[in-house]
Length: 115
Image (cartoon, rainbow, N blue to C red):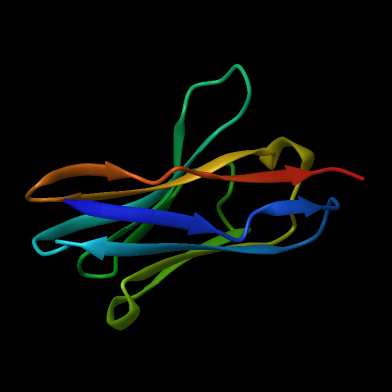
């Protein structure tokens, strides 16, 4: 089993920045990939950034150039640096880890971009 805990969300003005963290515990061996998703009210959950075991990254077009995903393997922590935030980035942000044991989700952290 893997437990994921997101943190770092909050209220920020348009153009501002936030850094989300996702701490992983439990059996993370056999890691395939780890990613950030978000879900806005009334919308489907969407993948916005993913990083593979080998450090390869990919981003949704909506966040490319503004968000940066990274991980600290020694701390079992995933990060999402979010810059130039827009009101349409408002959502609950989740981290997802896929390994040989399955797919795991955190509880999410709310990000609200508003003036």
